[in-house]
Length: 163
Ligand code: PAF
Image 1 (cartoon, rainbow, N blue to C red):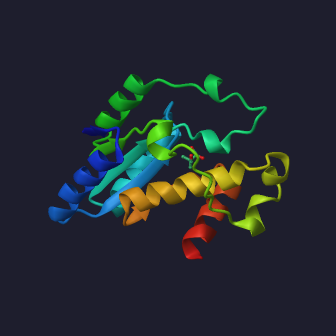
Image 2: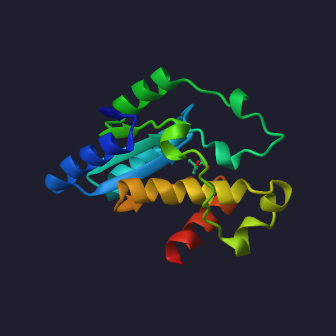
Image 3: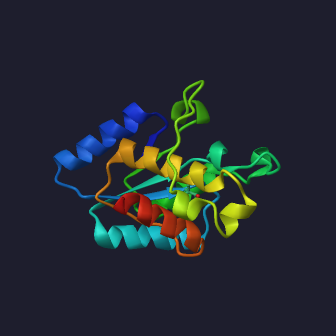
């Protein structure tokens, strides 16, 4: 499994997979993986030749009262779990790799980002849409797999892709 901390490295790895005619299945995560995530890897493997995972605790989806620094992290364990699933490559960027200083462009799906959980967590779904859009742009997957547990997130990502 290739561990790629930079955009350049993951793009190189994906170009290598594509050159071998592999369709790419992307599974974005924030790490601290559990069985649900591993099922998403297996689902991606059913729809693509090579599974690419991302592990990134995205600061822009945390509100001012939500403690980003306390989000659980265990990269070595996550990498072992992904290796055991046969994941081809994992993108593990730093916040600086994903957001250049002064970055303020956002992606929004206004019909879905401000209702339900979005009404209680202002900015959360803009953060999700922005980072998922970046991950899609960086990796250009053939398919991407998300859990259904956070149904509003799933609906928002589906609408972003459709639009
Ligand atoms: O569901 C998650 O883990 C995150 O919201 C996601 C989709 C990886 C974006 O940071």
